[in-house]
Length: 382
Length: 140
Image (cartoon, rainbow over all chains, first blue to last red; front, side):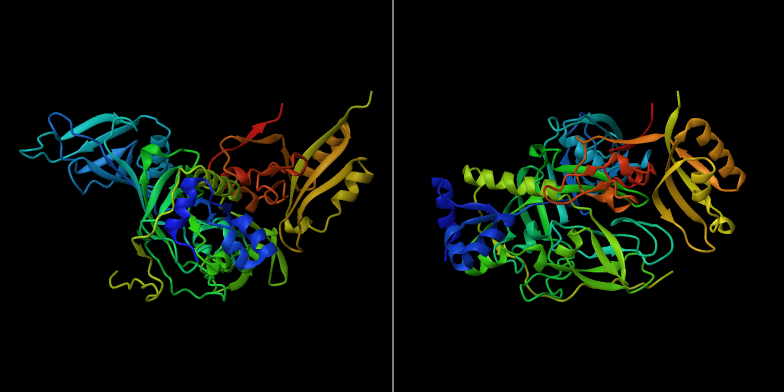
């Protein structure tokens, strides 16, 4: 048994043993969970995936005379301004009013992080204390007050893989799905993914310090659609979407290498977000949990056309092989989440901890481990 | 001097022509070397073949005329696929639509790999790429 305090002492002394979640698989295989728990202090994870539920709060600063902005556009993308005078929230999936799907909130965020100038246009009805009725200007990373990313739902703990049973190509947030079960797409870093390495949320909770978009950020709360009651395998990993995280971090300190705008054809705009979470190996159970491999993580392949209730259980080991068999036919599989960048993130985080630049935090509160399953939205009108 | 050329073409067969032995004709009559890269042929359905044809230039020209006369639609690929490797995040979305598996991703390092020889220049990856880093350029 180790405490987070003891692990942090080792990090400060430069004696902590830190490995990535993929390295942990081999370590546990070789020496077993008991010895691995004694040897390894921290396991680092990583993911770089499209995460639609992302966005940022920006405070622009006051002009003279001042304006109480009621409607705000950044590079022609509408930001939510129904908060205080010069605060706005730019959401990743909002589309440009002039360019449509070719540009969106995610692009505004990536451009902002890259240090580019962004055109701000805002309107108001004018008040005695805020007489200005419109403003046109440019903002950037250096001239706004705060700019913090606040993503209501990131790091989905597992996700269904997608396929298409119909005879027409469909365009989805799971990519282009070819007719007649022509392909299967999946989206997770699996054995390297944060919440799959702490499947029962023993160490990741509110206040956990994380790598977010190249900067240090925090878990703010359980994410929207957090669903811990999902069906699980004996190793604790869920077989579909389950836990989620709301993340917060200083967007001024982020790097565009780990925050990238993306467009899914005929679907829309989203944001690739890079997240890495360190997991303290407190005991033998955590050593076992962090050694989970793609062979032991499962999901269902589902029909994203909605035409059938097709569902087939499959391991990530099978999905990563390049083919799965559906109805007796070999079907090609493809990832949507970058394993290459996920590994880079897990490795950067490992180096930062080894250098004493990144300490492990004790959560202020753990995430809900049980709960009602998700509500459905009833239709009560036309 | 014999002028030898290689072209890549897509052939679309109307349902009535799907049983027509076009490949045999191309080999026997026009002395072409035929390499089938991709085939989607079912009885009584529109069929699609993507083939590489190698032979003397005048024979290729004659073969293309013959194909058109037979009521088979022929499209010559004269582009080449390029992508901005710096901007690519190696997510793998393009590999999900690549019919010839010219684009692949996997172990050991999950870096996108491109086999130019296998590429059909169909352009499906250009639209499927979420980072918009793929481009079909005209061949010189």
